[in-house]
Length: 482
Image (tube, rainbow, N blue to C red; front, side, top):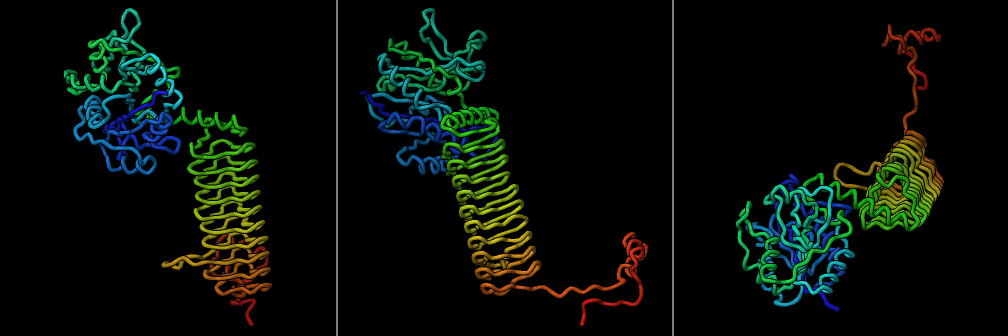
């Protein structure tokens, strides 16, 4: 079986229409930069060598690509003199015989299936050059495929150089080519820059090879959406939506319910088991794993997190954390990095948890902040409890035992430990350890200053209501004092 000898990916462009400090090929779709989508699509062809032509922001591109594809080689195109010039540079030192695949780094929707079919057709037909083409409802901006009277490929005309009739052609050049290496080298040497851009066009190689009586064919793709490129933010969004639909369709076919696929965004790296239900407006990102029976959403974001069987996360955000089997989160809560919720733990409404572990069956029902804490099993954290973990310089740990009852509006000033089975009184500021089985009470005794409103807020509605209720405005008297 014939093997691909070389893959050349063109990724040197400025990407000025993106209007971004980020290089165009590093803009992301479904958790991967555009260039990585192309690399993943070409990988199954097992090319002996992969070369990327880089230019604009080369350091950023090389650093990102090297982390995922360390075997890739980078070729610098300092002066962007066109696609033909880029391929000339990439061919320097390349094998002198064999087959080379050339494609752009901004076509994230290409699939390995299409590329393999393209390669097999090229080899099977014994072509010296093959061009992947597609019919598209909007050909603006693309090179047009010009065929002769017999339907054979005649030439490729760039948008800027096309005449009015050529611009009516709806078959486009996808920018994906296969060449016999020796034939390509000869044609590249004959390129001229006599065009509107004053550049060396790779597309001109086709005419040169045909003039040399070499076999040049056009092979149509069955799905034009695979060939869509990205030149601006609008096209980025268009490609992202197509990728979203592909991912969601594949996931639903494995036994996952996605209530509204058009508002559900899932990265390629996510793993979702069957019988998971995902409600509208949810985003599942990074290395997230969701076990069977979990319910996600609506309006929930998960990032680099694991969700156990039967867990439920509603209208909340979870990042770099673990949610155990049967645990519940939300609505309107934020689970920050480093958090571990054990089985059947509950984090209720308007709760923030950071870098903490919450034991099996324990509850933080509402309106609380838990930071840098370890909470045992079967414990209940009352409403409006704050774990005061930061002293302005350092973070400190709070340890709460098993079956503890923390009263509402408690402040736990770390470092502090509350032992197994202990209580804290509502409204307490706990600064010292509470031993097991004890109740911590840290609040001043209440005192009532009688008549204060009538004296200090005379003429107000409060004073009027107090007088009607029988309040007296005599000399100050304090209830509750010894």
